[in-house]
Image 1 (cartoon, rainbow, N blue to C red):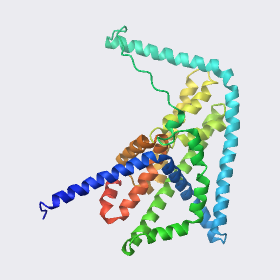
Image 2 (cartoon, rainbow, N blue to C red):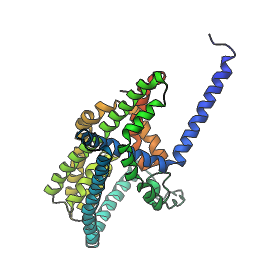
Image 3 (cartoon, rainbow, N blue to C red):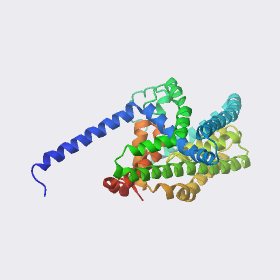
Image 4 (cartoon, one colour):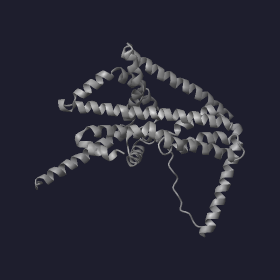
Length: 353
């Protein structure tokens, strides 16, 4: 039975929790460049570890397999950059010849918007000459601010990204050592729970990564077929960009439409082909959301939609665009921890589906 003495103790405990939460939040914000770099490296570690473990079982030393995997990642990144750079360079070089056509499309959209506005004003009996409040000019922001709150310059981005290959290599090569000694940090009675937690995090994150890669590849292939059928310029460049942008939570369908519509606006004189392309991209996204996501990702994460939405809002607010990309794997890892710690399981059930 609670006593009067218990109330101050509970208040102090609650106050300490608030202070600890504020400290963690401040650290995540101020050290966001470091934390994001480490989290991204962890995601690549989960993606590459099955291959390195398979090579290890075949007799290849883990350090050598890890080095080969990192070299393969760098080779893929360089090949993709070379392929897309050539396409992008051709697109940019041809852009001046398309500027007049783009300008006509913009004027057409503007005229349609003005007509709709005039009709709305007439229906609502709004006086067109009404005085509108003067808005302060929006402050100019550098593009890097949209990547994350802690990434303050392009130099810092390059500096932190340069650590990613090394982190991936050491995480892969020292996996057994890190796992074994991480478990030893816990008391003897909690080590089994720690093992289950690590396994749960691994399964959730790996399922999320592989699921998104498969879905992005399927959407890219479908988009490529559609774009080729429509005669879209630079289909080889636009299809993978649109396909993998479509896997971005919530905003994916809108982001996926932008590249092909911009490319199509340089060729088509009417809006019908652009509407067809946008409808196709939206249709692919809806099919992926209702068919592929539940089978490839939803069955592994077990997160309810409320938690997913709140996590996207929180991490997007804290870290910007990178927060949106990392929100779901971070939340899935938190649920894996909650599910395997007895006193926190109620939070895991709250987050689950």
